[in-house]
Image (cartoon, rainbow, N blue to C red; front, top):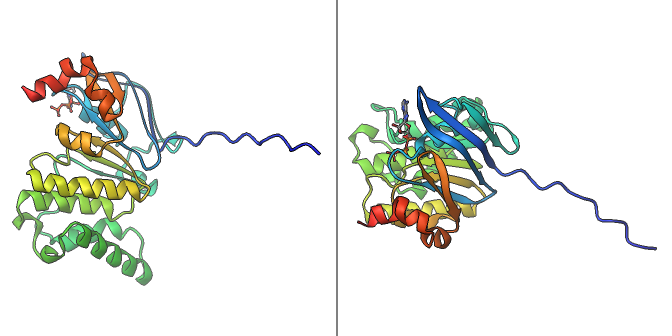
Length: 252
Ligand SMILES: Nc1ncnc2c1ncn2[C@@H]1O[C@H](COP(=O)(O)OP(=O)(O)OP(=O)(O)O)[C@@H](O)[C@H]1O
């Protein structure tokens, strides 16, 4: 008897899919038809010169900016616009402004996003998750200190811990390497690689080109609100349009 024909399985939707995204601020077109996708366990970096529209893409994905056209989908469904809605869909983010609760300790800051459910078991689970993330980010020794007493690189790690403690499937990072020195950036690169190895997808908005080329599977280059190049780090590095739009500028 002949084998039955193979059943056709629809391809899984990307973890994050941005299609034809346009954003205008008054008369200014900040984004003009941006397409990008982040697949399972993939790290995609969005780079480009100042004002290219990177943060606007990030904010549109997080629901902080309303697109004038286009679509943002997470796992094939329309992206929610609120932080709690995003968390419920497994999306966590860090913002340039860190968003920490000054006056609260590192432990309290990290425990809070992990305790969305009530009950003893949920609390124990949240505490275990917070402890594991603090340990991974080398923050256990400072857990009882108020966050505002910490130096900037540690505050930045607390912000990352607050995102990671929720166990995201999609992690959105806005300039995670900004303001960090070489050692802290190397440690951050290890964390991003670990997170992706654990199955989480990462969208990274970043200026630090060496860091991007080190951790990203794919790089998307924006200039004047449009995608001017995308591909592997090597492909993007070799693209003359990127050289003139961005990389040459950075190296100069
Ligand atoms: N809330 C806003 N109101 C008006 N214009 C804005 C607003 N946010 C961004 N813009 C403008 O939109 C354009 C894109 O800005 P965006 O911050 O997304 O760029 P970027 O690539 O993230 O820049 P940078 O690397 O400097 O952070 C810029 O011209 C910026 O001035």
